[in-house]
Length: 227
Image (cartoon, rainbow, N blue to C red; front, side, top):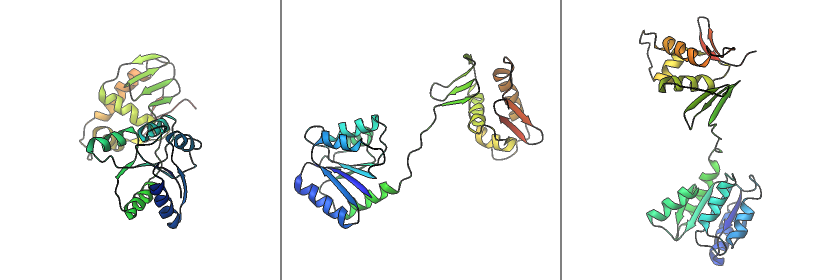
């Protein structure tokens, strides 16, 4: 792995770099916060892990992490600092760090934490707005629109539409919808799915020229743009 260490204590920085190098990693070390931020934000894939002290000349560790996250840098960050209070740890994690280790520390623990961070799968961007043709579903504002017109949905209708849109083009069976939308894992022998699909169509499709919600005979339901 390639690791960036931003630590202003020369002896501490050398100790960490030597240990990481002996463990088979490539280590770059910087002692100034501004230089560290510049280096950390040059390339999204340049480093596998960044180790940052909280108290640094030029720019403090919290500011480095906040700025890196604002720049969409998703590299795992470990705070390594003498500031070990609960509030300090919470502040560091809320700033965007992935882990927090307090000095003094055992190098074996530091190495284990670095390795664990590197094994984490990359964070996937979560879409906040789903779009199919002229239909939009804003998951943050909990708002649906089609052709620029607002569509008033009941909470369960919203979840049903979200479930269909996330599976765009795929057929979801009645059983799948019961599980995903109603968290029902047995057949209640009711028409709840059909009733809600009908209500959804009346709001999403009926006022418009093109239908997006489709019934797949003897199978289930699907939502997709005209083909």
